[in-house]
Image (cartoon, helix red, strand yellow):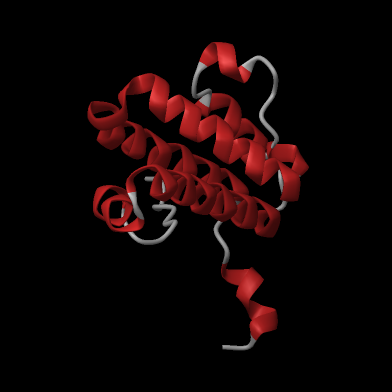
Length: 124
């Protein structure tokens, strides 16, 4: 495949946004029994902070810590981006989340719990 055509096959930013939100909801459901809701929110906020250094439009707003995981707000932020930027930012956020979890529980356990790679499912 010609690498110049790669961006032509990306899903729309709105689809990426819905998929990211869905994936994070799944991760929250999987992790809450192990690290409780507060632990999941802390991992999410730290991941947003790290991601925001590379993708400033994803930097965690100050009110995020009071509201927990604002996945609807995140969806809106991602959907407003160009498709390629949305895909890159979403993948970086999921990768950061996975790395933060791996620091907490080890990479093998993180892989077992939420998978090996930052996959954004298709939103149906």
